[in-house]
Image (tube, rainbow over all chains, first blue to last red; front, side, top):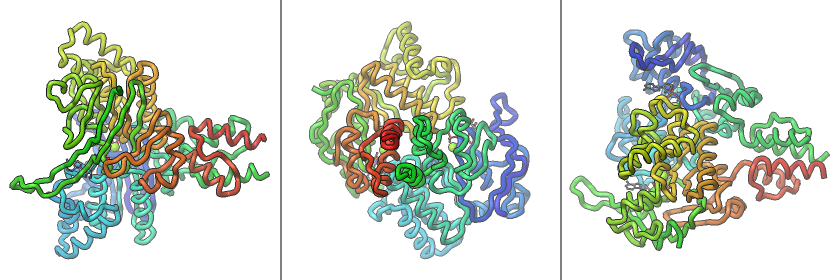
Length: 282
Length: 285
Ligand SMILES: Nc1ncnc2c1ncn2[C@@H]1O[C@H](COP(=O)(O)OP(=O)(O)OP(=O)(O)O)[C@@H](O)[C@H]1O
Ligand SMILES: Nc1ncnc2c1ncn2[C@@H]1O[C@H](COP(=O)(O)OP(=O)(O)OP(=O)(O)O)[C@@H](O)[C@H]1O
Ligand SMILES: [Mg+2]
Ligand SMILES: [Mg+2]
């Protein structure tokens, strides 16, 4: 048991004429050690959901529990919560503020009360993990390219060694190699340390390849919560809600249309190749 | 002569300490010479920090070359007298639409550019209508941009650039934050502008499947053009692309996996339908 949402509603600008539901009656349980993906059309409520997980937002109705305790109850230590439930924001600019890259990444661990030396060791490790060269360590984070800023923001959260790591579109704007490297590193980190990972993404290919459980948000509600393979069986309703299938799955559907008797369940290139190879060998 | 032309373009960012003394230099563009013909659809790929945005910012005179020259429609962008013309010829769409949207309602936002250019009022409204229709957003003209989805906002910012009647449009990662539906809409709108209106397009992206429709792909590395050609030519160099931190669309990965498994499928077929047809042919013999 790790994070529980109990009948959570979230309304932005409640009490004004602009008030609008961002989340409606969310019930959700996230277990320790899971690797969860969240997909959904723009404006479906993904970022709102992630910010409720570490108490940056407070539910309009309902409760969010971390390890059995309501994180919005009186006297709950939110600072400690945020070091244990780390969130990398969708826009890395919102997370960078120190004069140079290295200090920026040290900030989190220092704030946790670690010694300067320990904080610096963690910063080195985190920056290495996200593939930032040391030539950038003493530059201003604001003078970096878009993808470089994102790496630094991810390193800043990794350096706190959270138990739950939430990444809100961490690979948007990263080059393909950087995207693979970061997702591979996170997968490795999860295997080695058993941390819980929540990955918000607009890449169907990435969630198909990496996550074990996939939550689909649609207009503030959970539309599906299942394995990626099961979720991607719903081609039509996913497309209607602004989503898609992994590209390779479309190739399988297209083959079927052309009369080739393939099973269309493949969601990764490897699976598709196996399925096609076994047909062509017959 | 091309609509966008650069000759040995170089750009250096100079970092300064608190006192303003130079502390370090990054040569972000290092000798780029290109010639883009009117109506061409050019995609620019390249790893993070390879110089794509820095390059794009030269075309509409946001940054000024350290060395070399940039011409837009024959005009040297370094000449202050040309800046106005250059910005009308080459419109820029940035990654984050929020940085670009200023109006309270959609049509006002789109009309802002032509209004600033001194276009007469009646013509402004004609241009607004035409641009919003081009990106299929006319029915949202009275809405507040804040109430739109990311893909819709991004299309409004494209309409804002279109209303200035540019001959050329530069898009710097316009789909990075969009859902798959929104990405498709934006790419479809851009292709239509290119094919129907003959507008020159320069598209910067990290999504390999968005560039398969381009006439030409440029790959940047350390401020230089490391590779260029048609999408087919570029994507057939899988190993070289990997060295450059890039990737290929999944259909090419699939063909490669099949070949590794002893099934012979050409490795340069682009497009979901095209790939399926090729495999089906193999199957039906
Ligand atoms: N600060 C805010 N004030 C008012 N409304 C907001 C605010 N932030 C988000 N919203 C609205 O709440 C809804 C959910 O937004 P949210 O940012 O959670 O979506 P998302 O799924 O993360 O979208 P995206 O994929 O574009 O990042 C949207 O309708 C959005 O317009
Ligand atoms: N304002 C700035 N000051 C100093 N250096 C900068 C600045 N902006 C960019 N740079 C550096 O210039 C180089 C090129 O950056 P640029 O933003 O053009 O890359 P890019 O190819 O657009 O990358 P991305 O894919 O991450 O957006 C990088 O090394 C970057 O760190
Ligand atoms: Mg979001
Ligand atoms: Mg850039």
